[in-house]
Image 1 (tube, one colour):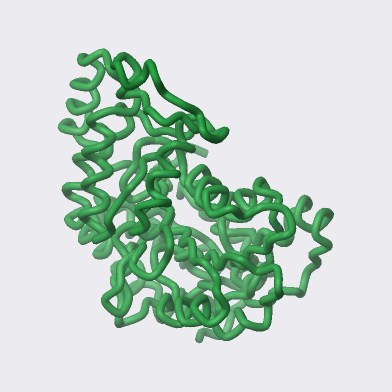
Image 2 (cartoon, rainbow, N blue to C red):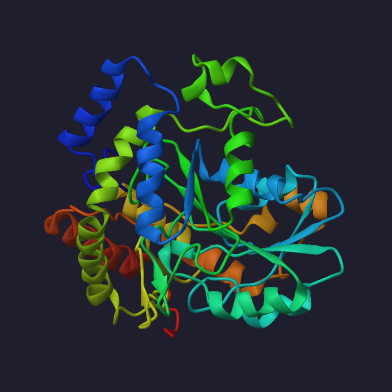
Length: 385
């Protein structure tokens, strides 16, 4: 079935393409001045001191954990309701991911359940700002302070987000960003770390480029001839090509968010009173990045709804199937169904609808009509919250 309403479209424009072409003409394509310009822009936008451009949010999470000394024998508390990269990054340090169930109304990690999951081995609290709504960072920061924990935010969905006047990175050791193809601003692949810690910033800059004391921009200078490798690192550095694609999008990110928010609100108004549909709560004291537009339907009928939408040419997805139910995590850590009921209910009932800043109203009307039709055909009403 050909999609007539795609799941996403990027916001790349002709100026962005021209920025990339300009970098291509310089003959310097890896990490250099353009990456540094983007990093300065990201730090300024979020109010943090430093940003480090990387190849992905996965790389950002992994590098933060490594740079903070997390390894075998340590535990990292996080949510089971996220893309699997969140937990994979923990696993690849040798540490153990320990899951905490989520709030039923937002899908974010439930601060009320965090302290019960702590152990003497807990080192890090890793909240995920699901769909673009910030977790209760003030409460999580207070818990972390009481127990001597470090907070690393998975802010892959949440570049623009605020809550209670706090932006990403404001109450954490680091916040990790994604610029994957579907994200609000994109370089196809890419990520970054935000931090106010100068020592962490310098170590991340080394570790992203093999652990070398001099980066790619110094490769042909006198400085590079005398570089050192004080520790083994990775090949995680962002290129100037990726940065060039992002710079213009970052400059207009608030305007893009305004368009995205209007499109989200259009869905919310049309589906709010529809029997059989729940929507995640959008908190009034926050700025939501609206990375994804999700609805929840009867789990017994969810796959029928997905199929019905796809048959009507609507691009859809599921965000997310809980990580602890994936075979690797069941077999390696002994997880089982029923451990995290709120995350499991959301994962089993969620349908993610097309959302992007310039989605045509006619396309949204088609999505709304298709949702109503598929529910009439297949869904048993689920009591709304």
